[in-house]
Amino acid sequence: MKKFIIGLSPRFIHEENNDFIRVASAYNEAVKRENIVPLIIMDTPNLEDLLNLCDGFIIIGGNDIDPIDYNESNDLNLSRGINKRMDEIDKEIILHAKKHNKPMLGICRGIQAIAVYSGGSLHQDLNHANISHPMIDNTHHMVKKVNNYGVAKLLPDEFMVNTYHHQAVKQVPNDFLILYQNADTIEMIESTKQPILAVQWHPEKIINDKYSRIIFDYFYRYFK
Image 1 (cartoon, rainbow, N blue to C red):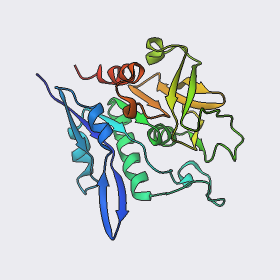
Image 2 (image 1 turned 120 degrees about the vertical axis):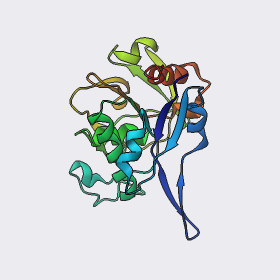
Image 3 (image 1 turned 60 degrees about the horizontal axis):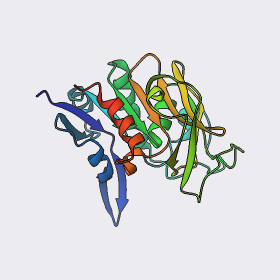
């Protein structure tokens, strides 16, 4: 059986005078398949060689992207926990995947990074921007289909997802379609030109949910 290497974008954490590279265990559960080998990407001098080993990528959740990367300032401190090291490695992974037409799945910060490094932009804070994003108990919200394209053909018109964000995509990059929204908030996008799908919520946290499985199965169909 052929094995495929899926690169996972790293998250850099500083705790008690130590630096850590981390990926939440939920992502490991999401990639547990016989033909998939997960690989946490490191920002080494040989990064391009590491990226070349990968057949596809998952851009995972994390803190906010520096708004300078989409030509805005952070004068109001709306963007939180900015880590330029994290921004740079996400950018390198995304540009590599797009250049080589490799499959890519973005999750939470991942959809935001894919949008930004593909020429789009973000709402730095939904409340500050007066963007409607109705939630249920501050933990869940509904998403509604707006385009029946790609993975949306396999999903219902509406379904419930989890909520972990205060930012969202504002300007969708060229060659991407919005598939789902929550009121005015963009929740899922897919490229019409390349194998790229991204969601604003965390399907890996509810991996046993049938709609989460559909999303991951849709991504993994490239690796057969």
